[in-house]
Image (tube, rainbow, N blue to C red; front, side, top):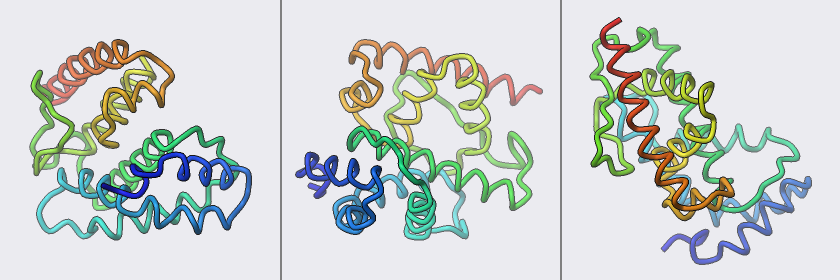
Length: 194
């Protein structure tokens, strides 16, 4: 079990101290979150094409560099930190894909499919840019549903952890998760027709 999971109180305490400007807290936090960040990076990279120029370790390093630049974040807890980290990693991958001249919504990549049995994992070959665009559109319509997808799908958080991070009930997360998958599937299929 990862250190951040076995000592969530310590991680939360360090996150709060770091958010208040204590850089020493960040140095003590990094060993606690390293394994968890690698797990998120592997989850994000699982959807990338074979031979992708970024590796999970490089993705963690880039996310870490961006996290260092964040000043005075009001960190709530472990789930909030993981959500922000997952969002950063997704943005890094999307930026990377766009910088390599991928066409919007495809460029030869397979479309992302969300089905009712979706478990929080990515299948190889999915189009992260199309998913990012669909999530951005969902966030404009319903920000919380977009956050639920981000936390569950990219962050790998459980329903309970997601509920805790968003300060809602587990029933709300379950409902939002189901509705968001249907909305995203419709959005992605619509993008394939345009």
